[in-house]
Image (cartoon, rainbow, N blue to C red; front, side, top):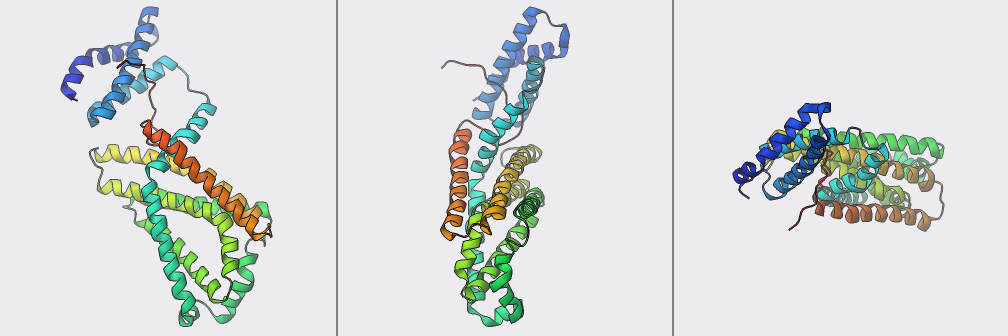
Length: 331
């Protein structure tokens, strides 16, 4: 698309819309109708520019104009329930789906690291001795690991786990802007703890206990952590390579998408916390415990894939920026 020709063709409409917005409450009935028509038309122009020729300056100008036009037309904010519904069905799944290769990639690499570490620990008694004394290891594998899930009441334990996991995920995500270095540290620390514990449990014949207690909540919990890490790494990479956008614009857009991830993970980690608090240590049938965790994981992945893919196809990115209404067009 020829941007200069497009601007020349529609600039008069944009200037007229801006003039009507600036006039404020002094609009006549005819001018109000004109304002609504020009707002819808400009919203469509913005959609065309974004999809055909994402010129940063033109997109920024039209985005500001459409946002002001919406405020002038709507007058009041949309109901809270509508914002929450849109976030749950569009913004969060779109952001998660768009970043799928980031968090799936670090999930694969992170679990490979944990697996290699677990095998190394399990097969080397000298490594085990460097980690803790034989008495401490025996207490861990025979008592402490299982008792951890039942030593507090289910409700207080679920809340404690939720807060801790949300905090860890927030650190991984927010501090990704520091070139992703703190985010990588969070991932490494998480996988080292997982691998060392698994290695010690398997070395003492407690592998079934390990998986029986980790899988119910760990599938969803670790997925949430990997998603936070993926979003943090994406944010850090944007600092290095903003692509065709200016660095400021790219960081603003990816930062808003990261906020969508952060808010969505509060709910996801709340569910995993409930499973860890009320299922992991208290449901004594192993297949049922694991089955609950598998169902929760499958539901979450289906939610991201189905709703996220649909939203991304419609042009959503998870960016929390105000999205305009579009006027119907022909052709």
